[in-house]
Image 1 (cartoon, helix red, strand yellow):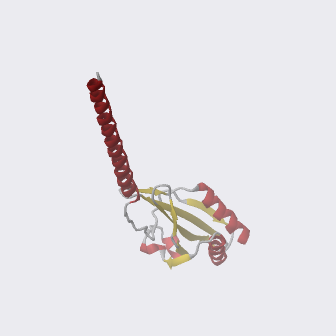
Image 2 (tube, helix red, strand yellow):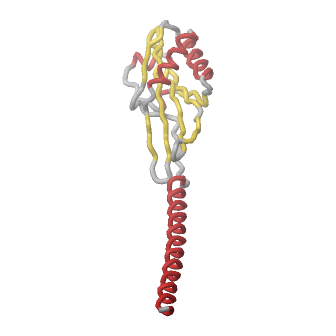
Length: 177
């Protein structure tokens, strides 16, 4: 009887050793899986955000002010929100202007700097284009184009909408005029 007990005890100890090895293997696999998912999600995806933003979802408002005053108010509004103007260009370089009347009026396209931030699973880059068009001597149309590029290691997501920030910029331009 004593032998029988020793054999069961022996099987019992082998079972504990197997369970212990199995749990070590499971923990190792879990750690490797976590490491792999972290590397996949963080990755090293890089995408450049363009200066020119297409007019996929522009925000447009007409201000009753001359072109120069509206331009200064737009620059000050962006500056108040922590943005700076990186570049000023002629929109004819990017836009097709069919109207002869519009071609004779003043217009300018302002490119903001890029604001970099962290998203939950990647990087987030944001940029504005401010397109100013003189409608008449005392009237200027301002168009805000917004782009957020969220980059994950595998895919990039483009977002052309941010109603809250566009409305905030317009109200700040209004207050500077």
